[in-house]
Picture 1 (tube, rainbow, N blue to C red):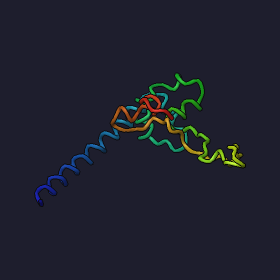
Picture 2 (cartoon, one colour):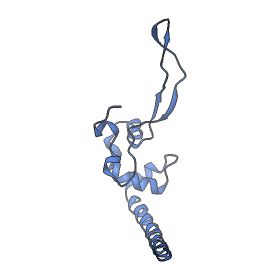
Picture 3 (cartoon, rainbow, N blue to C red):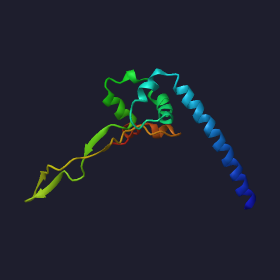
Picture 4 (tube, rainbow, N blue to C red):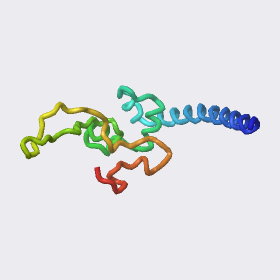
Length: 127
């Protein structure tokens, strides 16, 4: 048991060392692209997140508006409620409720799996 724990500790140390070098390389590569300077002006996007977004987005110019771009990245705000209808006197009536806000569900998630990068509607599910 002790040997396996030591081996895992050595493996973790080497992965952490690689991670630092990879992050620096990602940031250096992303700074070569002029789009990264535009993305740096967005609040909440740091250099690592921008380096992760660039290969997914490819170019900003394929989006007509910035709203489409933010929705593609998962930062677009949507309005939805869970109680839009109530039953009054045997009939269903729409209730004017205060709208809640949140990020859209079709966002592109950053990760290693390609299927997680696709929005839910592209995977055959209905929203």
